[in-house]
Amino acid sequence: MKLAVRHVTRYGFDTPVRRLVQSLRLWPSQFEGQTVLDWTVDTGSAIDGAGFRDGAGDWTQTASLRGPVEVQEITVTGTVETRDLAGVLRGHRERVPPSAYLTATRSTAGTAELRALAADALEGMDGATVLDRAHALCRTVNEAIEFVPNETEPHTTAAEALAGGQGVCQDHTHVLIALAHAVDIPARYVTGYLMSTEDSVGAEASHAWAELWVDGLGWVGFDAANACCPNDAYIRLGSGFDAGDAAPIRGVVDGAATETLDVSVGVVDGARQSQSQSGGGQEQSQSSDGASQSQRQQ
Image 1 (cartoon, rainbow, N blue to C red):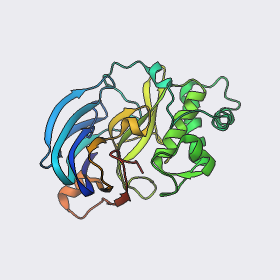
Image 2 (spheres, helix red, strand yellow):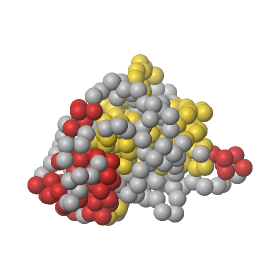
Image 3 (tube, rainbow, N blue to C red):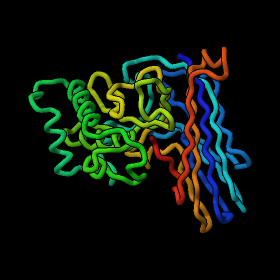
Image 4 (cartoon, rainbow, N blue to C red):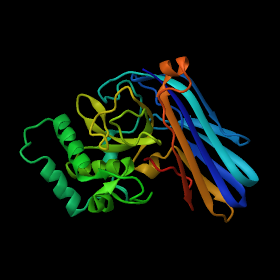
């Protein structure tokens, strides 16, 4: 499938800041499941800095803007040809060992409640494969947390999301990672895009899912918000220990100001788009006062 993306992020400051430095992880991953046909990251008047591929295989580039800065807009456009590999991250080159992703963060820290949920999910599966156990954990998270936007905050932890029983894909992913850690399965947070369908949730903004390590297969994606493995409707950008670590945009502001964030994301079938510019995609704008320089995945 050919997926066409347009992703616009606009930061505004009520008081001009002296300088803005951002770390951008907005380029699609290199693996057998996706081929970039064209891709542009436009940072406006910012100065592009050094770029590098990190140990997890993700491309990162810096951008800086000298003030006074009142508005910074980043526009991502491009087309990616995707293949359905049943969630398997085949052909992705990285140097970080899977065992590193048994490390918990504040967002994915285990609690008695999370460990109990993991045990319940795997009850009677003592002889099951890691893959089957991973699927069971994914289904359990989908059932435990209802997808409801605006019920959690960017810094909501896995334990808090489980207690509330509601959240967005960021919360589903944090909880799934915590459950995987509870049963010694390496797991990490993944950011990207999802083309909206009638049945999908969380596709109106940048999306998130987890990857769990399965011996013999490697990293396998699990989207707990949709109770499935990523297919050719997904574009993978990058990974990390949690949402903050994997954020597509992170930044540092030199100056005291209240920040607002507006995001619009459109992912459409590129083949249909070439026939009609009005086909297939949905866009959503988000605003938040005092937002941080890292985006929240819906």
